[in-house]
Structures are given as structure tokens and as C-alpha cells.
Image (cartoon, rainbow, N blue to C red; front, side):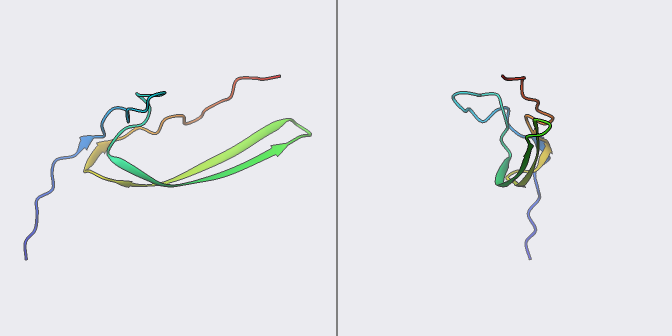
Length: 77
């Protein structure tokens, strides 16, 4: 049996190079699935939601970023 040594953990790369948001996200993991649960209550004019992300690391990570947590929409009329 051969056992390969794993590399030391490193942070995921900064940004994914998206042309509109080049510094958002990071490398080192692959988003596999997003599940969105959204509800709007017209009586209170409130929109609530939850996002669940299933991801898999593509390298031995010491850290990674999840952007837009606790995001709040600006008021619109």
C-alpha cells in the first residue's frame, strides 16, 4: 500500500476573477449546490430567506471566505 503525504493547508485563492466582481469568492472549493428558501409576507412587506450551500474542498484549505453573509438589501420604493 502507498500512502501519499498531503500538502500543508493553505488559504483558498483570493477572488475567482469574475469580470464584474473579481475579488468576491475564492478558489479552493467547488460549490456543488445552492438551496434557496424565500418567503414574502405582503402584510408586513417582509422578505425572509435562507441559503444553504453544499461545497467540496478542491485543496487542503486552512481558510476560505463566504461572501455576502448577513446581506441586507437597501430600502427600495
